[in-house]
Length: 259
Image 1 (cartoon, one colour):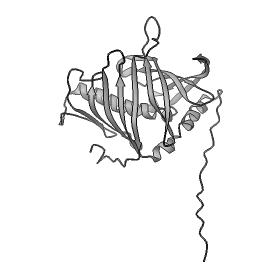
Image 2 (image 1 turned 90 degrees about the vertical axis):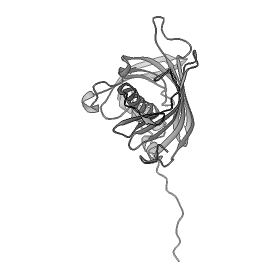
Image 3 (image 1 turned 60 degrees about the horizontal axis):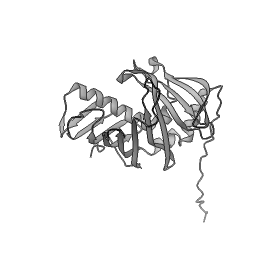
Image 4 (image 1 turned 180 degrees about the vertical axis):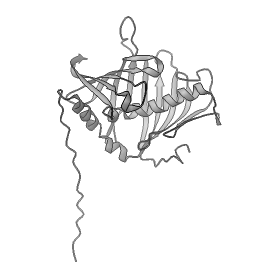
């Protein structure tokens, strides 16, 4: 009888070249350091609890977030919404982006409010993007420029300008970034970004990230945001995002993600 081998052959993905003369390689190295897009995509989907909070006021947006990576479907079920929308009530709000269109349920009824639809569409796309940012910085249409090195908190970082070609993305307004990459860990510990949707057209909002390894993917579970003023950036963050209870591979589909 022929003996059948039980040996499992693992595919080893080589670490990308990290070359400041070709800054696109730095973004590829960042993606690799986070576990790679293929690693994330194979997990299919994710669910987690999202807490977006102002330390000074205690106000927060709290939601159960669900995404399907292959189609960028994005679902958010809010138990609290005191910052980005409907700040003056306790209505139960569900936002659902099916990859093409946004739907908003308020207390179980579909909203026809165009302003709420607009901000919900923005949040669904934005929350998904922030979760997958490190895998998507080098998407099609990316324009990258190396800006030299910068010291921050006693460490030396490679500084990169990241913007997008509107003709490729199909968007009139595209976010832009200045990212600080740790050349040793290949992680983005700090970056600056714009939000054209909110009228912030230059990358001036600062963000510091902390990471956890969740099933082989480095996920930014702690995010600290600093808003600029005439005095510069504050020592304490204006807003803090916390991601908890992260679960991959839930079997979500367009049909069941809202259940």
